[in-house]
Length: 121
Image (tube, rainbow, N blue to C red; front, top):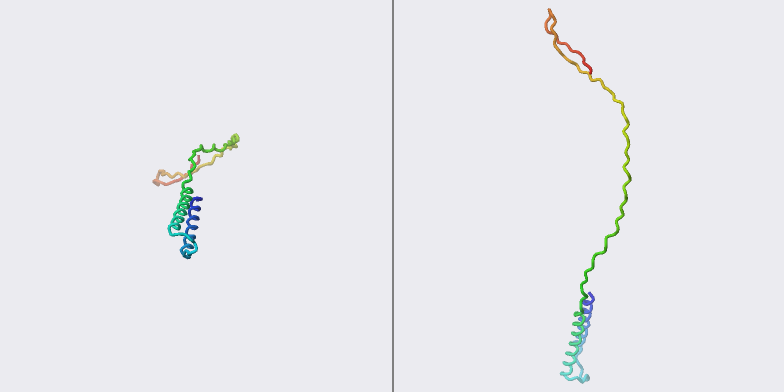
């Protein structure tokens, strides 16, 4: 990121200087011959190119692989001992289950008669 800023700043400065040079033509009082002007331009371009090249060609730091840090300590909380309790003893309650039983019975002189009776356990 730093190199990009340097390069873009240098390019912006170069664009500004060249824009100003084009906007105002050289006056006769500069006393520079066309060859001298070309030489100064070439030297300036080389200087700017060397500065940009030196900024870009900075050696990269070597890649260092480090072991990851140890994990944080683990704290183990002991569980409380289980609590056992006895169930309350219930008295057994007997429920009487009754059913109705139907049957047929022979009645002498009459015939078969249907009857029912209640049977409980």
